Length: 236
Length: 236
DNA sequence: TTTGCAATTGACTAACTGGTTAGTTGTGCC
DNA sequence: GGCACAACTAACCAGTTAGTCAATTGCAAA
Image 1 (cartoon, protein in one colour):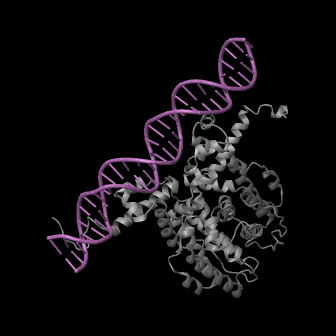
Image 2 (cartoon, rainbow over the protein chains, first blue to last red; image 1 turned 180 degrees about the vertical axis):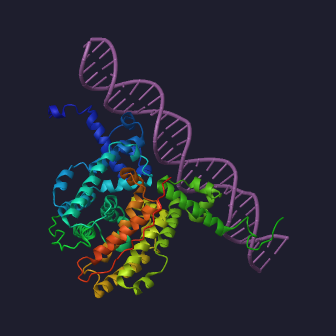
């Protein structure tokens, strides 16, 4: 019955796999219950490890939380598509940047939850991280490159602040997801059906591009796509 | 020495004042620490009452939280300016609606925090409330009235979904406030100085109105204020 | 085989925390 | 003046929780 697969040989002691299992269950726990609501005992049980092993690897509940937080934040901008976007025509590059930001939020509900959790805690944990911050510089630079290029091309308005623009792009995609539980109740609408996500995506892209192209002389062609493949996935 | 003021006569036992004091301190506690992080003992101490008095008045920690939540949510739409806004020209009415939504978020940080907290808890408490939901119907109706009027006036585009528009207006004003602690660190910018708030306000109004008026033939007058006094204020 | 060390565990605890029990005290009303 | 009841209090408790102690187990190198 027993197979002697080399890759599976060390089923008894496998530190890396164990560590990964802890991190995975910790993420689920923190996402579901927040930092204060999370229970180390539950994480240990779900990961099938002794609680003390968690302290052996991570030192404390908060250190474990920080590790989870860093991992999900770095995933946000891990795909280095900045270079590709900067090469595109400004309007198309911006359209893709907005759309991919939106898509990433939709595809990663855990990120939305942990961003909220971390801000409830005044961002005090993320500030201890050194790995996350650099990723945002690249994003802002890409935005700036596209803004300047768009102005030169005559398709974007002038005097757009890159940070303000980023806040708007993110805010448009973030709020209806982060607050979906109260909003769906208050507004009698399901926000995470595929059709709704598709509608929202088009609306967000449209709003950002309307703003950027507003007041520019040259009449532009249709500025946002109507070809939207479904790739939304709703969380459990 | 003792004054016999009728209004201040019952300093010893004043149920209403005591109840209000508890609610006030509870709000501070829930806003600062969230639901799980809040401590009933701390609320009792801060309100100068015996802890059991809290249970006498409110029954449980969660019931107290719900009361705090209801009060801050109803404040969001308490000012019945819906009627006034509907009377205005569409562009001006919409401009004021966006601006006042923005201003209310800025003026009520506790609301932002509690909205985040409640959504971390999947909105399960707010759903038990009956007082909050009706307020949102009026808001959506006002939005719808202004949208239709704007289309008739020829200043707004057609086919704008009122719910989507509300999500955008709120999202633009909410995100940079709710996530200001991580964002100010990641983007090296203070978001809550008076100058920044003013800039953000103009940007949000501009973006929403650009979207609504985009593609409409008739050229419109300047649609957003450009009066930006400069007075930078450094964050704590 | 031994030895060193990381991986892993079970049992434990000090501090906390929401909630309760069993009252006492003040006030309005008849 | 005394009764009913709400306002208010002190002390306590059972269950929980992050974190610790002391030990055992498996692996790999010498």
